[in-house]
Figure 1 (spheres, rainbow, N blue to C red):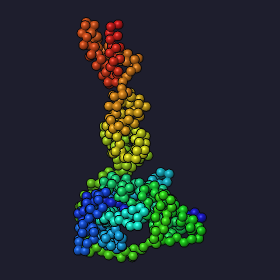
Figure 2: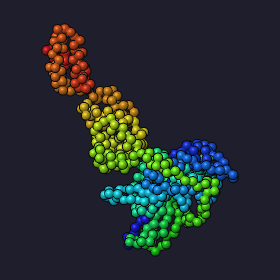
Figure 3: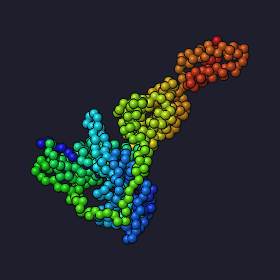
Figure 4: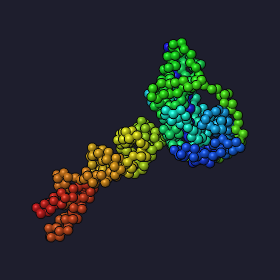
Length: 478
Ligand SMILES: [Zn+2]
């Protein structure tokens, strides 16, 4: 029997605000444990939350960029549960009236022919819990509440994703959009972007959804793909073997590459949601929303379309370059000072991406500036350096951070040392400067300096000056 995989994703995104969602504590990552806390985020009785305006505006920005509608009345709810890293025993979240709803992201369809739309069910604002640290080999755990109360966006899709590959594409696209919005550092390693998945399988053609399993602990996009692949296979094998699938939460174990049952899944009713009495519902002025909408930056899709239309890049190149904000910015800066956009794109798709992937850095961290790359391209155009030399110069520039022009000068790479070529240019210069030639012959030796200058000008500074001097003297005195 053939099975269909049905996946819904839930992304949690830490917003890059200076302070927490409902108190004034800093959100700085990596500070001394429990140094960024106060009565509000520690859940002391009688302390009152105040909504962080910036977090709220960031949330609206994300929602609009994802094509969501904004709720007219903003309301927060308490989601009750006990965790040692959640001292209040509830999380301020949004339940029946999420901040925004009904958005979408388009991902490449199979075989890259057109797009597939993944609907976004809701984007809501909530607060993060703290962190439990389990020292290896010890029989105790440590609690760090610095993260408690950090503003978090939850972005939930409809179950529109039908393969682990589509889940990967969706996350890649979502992250790309979020990076353009500059609302989060989107760093999975620091936990500022996290992804959980709901996955079920059903016989092909079946309308009713299978029993879903929630999959957690996938800390990289690759982990999401591998975890979902494993889990889809596990469920298909179980059903084929006559087993029942339980609604449960399973953890992805990246080392062993398997999923492990963690707990039977709670239902929403278990959380006993109720309106947060300390935060009154409020209405957002439409002009605020429209102001944010107008100020939205050009997003990756629009930018890719512009690169295809205005610069003649291939769709594939445009998608790759605009897929990462830092790469797109690098391209943008180059294209402002150099007209051959295809040449820039070729270098980005070739040397630059290869280097970034090996060094595991982004284009913002690379050791060559856009001006540096353009200098290389111009030197190639002038014939001052060969394509092979250009690659050597690039390789040295990214490692040493020395501007390419300096590397070329230092190594003498650009000098034209081919005597036949230099003799040709010298003859040309002599024929154009009869007066200086006569001056020299009449004993005005400084005319030589002028003629050397003319040869340098003709070769755009690329000629080997010692050789030029020798050839000029020889020709003049012949
Ligand atoms: Zn606090």
